[in-house]
Length: 77
Image (cartoon, rainbow, N blue to C red):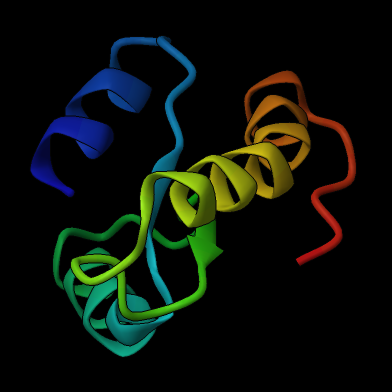
């Protein structure tokens, strides 16, 4: 989150990508850093026990939302 805030402060568009387990922690740390609007994309949790095929499916699903987040388009979740 610190890196994301620093990049955004320098005018570099960045997006936080994590599993849904980290939504609350992301929001809390963003508020602590004074970073009100965190561009974030969340994928289903857990990650560690997924097969390669499941990881590809998660990435395929997340990619349009990541691209929208860094281009200013709608993220749809």
